Image (cartoon, rainbow, N blue to C red; front, side, top):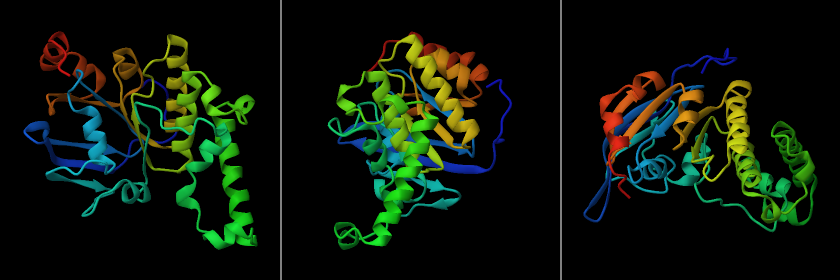
Length: 265
């Protein structure tokens, strides 16, 4: 990245330590390790079927690896699940949109505030003062996100009526609503045209630079990866074959060979 940073890269915030994952006799990930540093944008790239999404699924607790550990801010997670990982400050978006299509944009983003809601069912049902105050505060935070993402004009629109690029932006907004320290973005620009990709790149950079959020993203567009990433991890057949700055990775012969080879689904 060429722009000046408001948040310099800091200490390790997420460590993947010797992760291995098998599905029956199929080895999806093999002894994979890397470290993500606070405030950086870290890209994970590789040919189709290289294990990228499976790796994110291990990090956020969807999959349970047979070997290895995940550490957040230096503390190893002895138990791991999506809820535990979310409470430790890691949020996730997915390749396939997981939005509530009949709900409005603002209500979809509000779903991301679930971790910040402490009022119980009775307090909410009776609309007691604590529940009302909590809802006001959470909605105000979501309105800030709508403003940040420049989607005020569609805040009340059902998500299912929006074009794909805008739905991706709403999903980013819901992830931001968690106030996570680390965002795991699984192909945030998949299916977008050039203009939509440019727009999404701008917001990812803004999230990183203005909010100080650490970003880990899977992305197939090498132009995007080289433009916005601080460091890159390259997977091939579930193994790390290269790691470093975009320039270093781009000139790595193992990476060149992996991308010139036949994609393996």
